[in-house]
Length: 301
Image 1 (cartoon, one colour):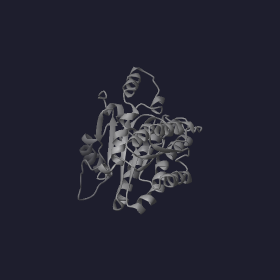
Image 2: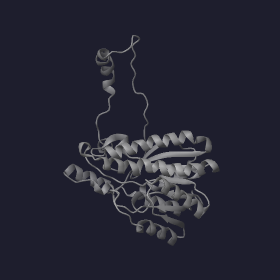
Image 3: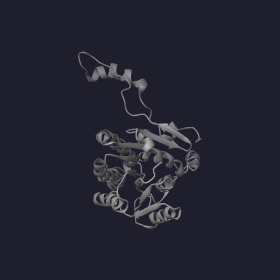
Image 4: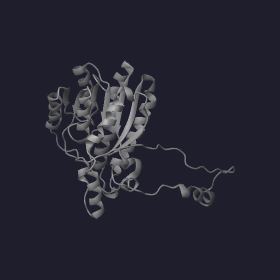
């Protein structure tokens, strides 16, 4: 479905990114495998994960090159896109998958915890998308696929940095979809449920968290790749500005913010009338403070 397309997958040395890179190559794409090779918290560097994925693709008869740079670096992001163009002649698809976790309850979260996570997820997605956008505009085609999370779409405890970045990516994707529609460029989000080394950092503190982890372990990263390949393909060109979730064998089209209820007073509002009129009308429609696991409460199927 993506034969001869040139695809840059960030964070492709392990987990979800690795399986996306492998499936893109299996369907005929030429792949730039980006991975800094750091820890799940963003520390350190290791070129071997990206090189191993490249070797696996080549052994299967595909074409791939490795890139070891950080998406959080604006110039490095531009260089990885230019590497794709130099190696394969063009760039057709960007999969913004690179990510890290620094989970901590909000009142203990440091500035470094915030900046590092937002820098990789949100700024990194902007950096790579911005670099590719100029090529997409010139060639009048292209596809962006960004990874979001139900941590931002729904909510989770101890992930304010990650949730904010992931919900920011939704806004970024929608803006790209609208701004670049005239150039036949699509932009969509995937919210993956999959067991990976990032999810493997979830602390097991009680029977409920143990049960949650056991459910997550059933959902392999390979389950995410088919949707990414579809969105990258010619068959997916009519789909843009959407948010999808993948949970084992389930696909979801996620909602986007729209008005739920309105109230109006011709004489305007005061704090007192808001208390007496507006909030009682709104209250039945309030969203509960639910975690992702409470909304997706059934076992993966």
